[in-house]
Length: 146
Image 1: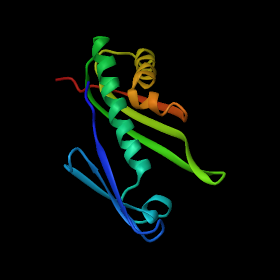
Image 2 (image 1 turned 135 degrees about the vertical axis):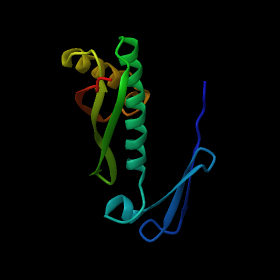
Image 3 (image 1 turned 90 degrees about the horizontal axis):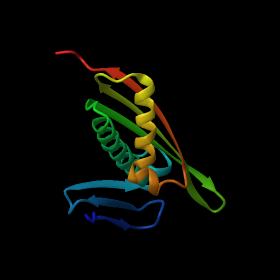
């Protein structure tokens, strides 16, 4: 199976330093810093990257599950919010909120909700993040008729 790689470089102390996270052989480089992680500073942070990865993974899992059920989606848009909280002397991610909207034809909301919950459970990122509470709010949008 595939092995994916990311790399992080950090320079300086934790509060004034800065770093870069590189994804996919430097195809994407994202700056990050203490201010971006714990304040409202510019740049990204590990929790946003986890959220983006989870949103992408879940969207693909939902597309597969819907397609396997005979309801291929037109469009899926997912937002993930990874909560970072202080715990003792460190920090934890106790919760990830997934919020998705899917444009799908020929499926009722009850079936869609069941499929969406199954996709949440089966998504590899949901599995790796299983120490956190993962919630899902799924909204079914009717596909435009052509």
